[in-house]
Image 1 (cartoon, rainbow, N blue to C red):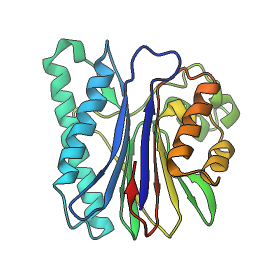
Image 2 (cartoon, one colour; image 1 turned 135 degrees about the horizontal axis):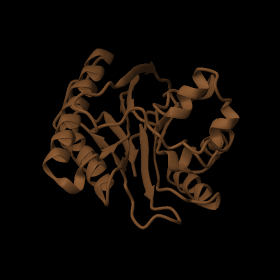
Image 3 (cartoon, helix red, strand yellow; image 1 turned 90 degrees about the vertical axis):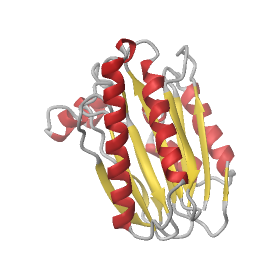
Image 4 (cartoon, rainbow, N blue to C red; image 1 turned 30 degrees about the vertical axis):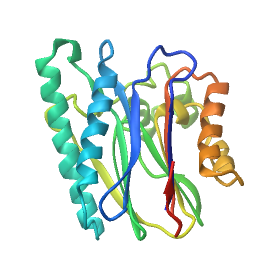
Length: 249
């Protein structure tokens, strides 16, 4: 496997509330995570950083994730744990009241990838069947689209586009959406915050992922384009390419 993680403050924001990374466990399997924090003054960065630090530390001590069932159990257990940690933290520190974060995470092995998410940070899959979003936003506008109240085109510019129906750390318990997919050589996963997905079409993402660039250059190009299109939000992404080679950047 090859993997790359990058984050950028964008062109407007004064600080970066996104956080993430790509981490390896004792068997060399990857955990890729992107978290987009939200809340009061600077509390968004607290929520996303606490989430990533916790998951990184736990993953690096983990081994023998040999089946989808074990991967799904790992994500359910540890994301439930960090949800409670964030919620308790927000109760004890006034400046962090109401803080939370989106999360999209992928456990990546040679045989399968297990994706868990809460909020509107996304995971896309590129394989022999094409390019598709494999997570579903937990957002108000997505609910309006699903129920036929607005069109997908309307959703792109809806004034309440940033309203989330589900986030990590805002309630004592939260539901994690989880799925496992099988992977083949040269498949690619793209995890990203909405600072990327709000700015680039799926076709633009696909064009970059299928280009001759290195993974590092693909990540840089995606961020550069999001900034070219306004860069109003922080931009964070992770790309994992399933191959027999092993490297991360």
